[in-house]
Length: 173
Image (cartoon, rainbow, N blue to C red; front, side):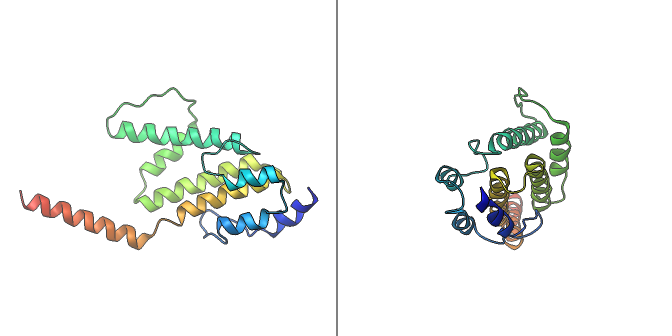
């Protein structure tokens, strides 16, 4: 565990509104030799829905509840039924409502990402140099990895293309 002092303190800070300071592969290289083989394998196979490993069971429950709330509110907005057999959380409902009322998809994703970072910070609590911090960092890096796939210019270009296509179909009727 002594090596965690160096590992945790040497990792660049992650913020929900920032970019990825390193790739996930680079993060794994930092962890190699500093975490147990068992923990390393868990980090290697980590996804946003992973539930095995330090902090991940709690994260999976929180993330799953958030995604269910998002799916339910989206379904209701479309007039479709959605099973409500999950534990409702008032904060999740508020965040999802803000996400669905965002001006654009990029803003909605940023609201969601900010909240997910807050959830992870809460789960990490006062942990400083242990597995919880390393796994929390890994999940945050995965979230930023997902965010890096969103490119405003490409999104706007695709939106214009789709909108133009719909307009042409309407005008041809």
